[in-house]
Length: 286
Ligand SMILES: NC(=O)c1ccc[n+]([C@@H]2O[C@H](COP(=O)([O-])OP(=O)(O)OC[C@H]3O[C@@H](n4cnc5c(N)ncnc54)[C@H](OP(=O)(O)O)[C@@H]3O)[C@@H](O)[C@H]2O)c1
Image (tube, rainbow, N blue to C red; front, side, top):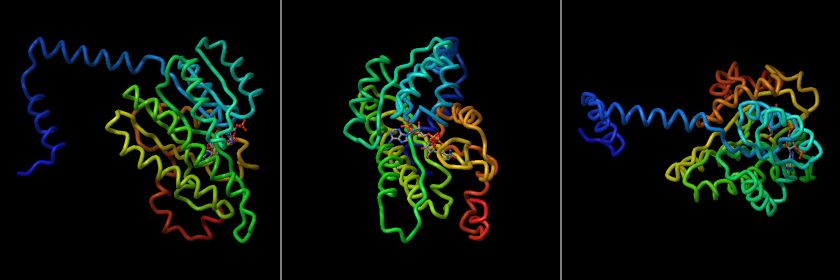
C-alpha cells in the first residue's frame, strides 16, 4: 500500500504507540503532558484591536479575568483608559495605544511598541471593524472604501504585523473577526459582506502558509451580537450579548481550532445550505 508522507509518519507513530511502556517512556510521556499543561495554563500575551467597545471590550474583560496579559487598541483612547481602570482589580498587565487601523503605516510600529511594553506577544486578535449601509446604484464609494480599509485591509495590516513577530519567535496564533456575512448575504451591506468574505479568504490562505512556522490561524464568524456596530441589533435573529459571545470565543482563541461560528446554533446548520434558502426568507430575517 502506498502511503503519503503524513500517513507514513502516522503509521510509524501508531507502531511506536503500540510498543509496551517502559518506565523511561512513561516518565518522558508524563513530562511532556505536564509541560503541555503548564504551557496551556500560563498567561498569554494577547493583542486585541477594536477593544474600546462591543466584542473586543467583552473579550478583554473575560481574558483579564483569566489572568492573560493584554495589549488593547482603538481610536477612542478615553474608552481604553476607562477599560484599563476597570480591569485593574484583576491585577494583570494591560497596555493600551491609540490606533486607527485604516492608517496602515501606523499599525506595525504601534503593535511593535505594545509588544515591547508587554514583553512579547502570543496571540493577535484583529477585531476592529465597522458596518455601513451601501445601496447598490449609489455612485459614491466613500463608505465602501471605509469598510474595506477597516475590516479587510486594517485586519490584514494587524495580522501581518503580528505574523512577522510570530515568524521570528517561531510560534503564535492569529485570530480574525470575520462574520457569518462572509457566507450569508445581507441586502444593503454588500461591502460589509465582501470585506468579511475577503478576510475569511485571507485567513484561510495564511493558515496554509504559516503552518510551517508553527503559527495557527483562527477565523471567527459571529452571527448577531448586541453591540453598537449597527442600530437595533435586537431586530436581527438569534442575537446574543457580547459577554456571551466572548465566553464562546475564548476556548477557540486559546485552542487550535481553525474556524468558529458564534453562536453555533442555528448558524452552523444554516451556513452550509444558504444557497438553497429562498431569497425572500433571507431578506425577511437578515
Ligand atoms: N456585532 C455583530 O453582530 C457582529 C457580527 C459579526 C461580526 N462582527 C465583527 O466584530 C467586530 C467587532 O464589532 P462589534 O460588534 O463589537 O462593534 P463595535 O462595538 O462597534 O466595536 C467595533 C470596534 O472596532 C473599533 N474600530 C472601528 N473602526 C476602527 C478603526 N478604523 N481603527 C481602529 N479601531 C476601529 C472601534 O473602536 P474605536 O471606534 O474606538 O476606534 C470598536 O472598538 C467587527 O469586526 C465586526 O465586523 C460583529
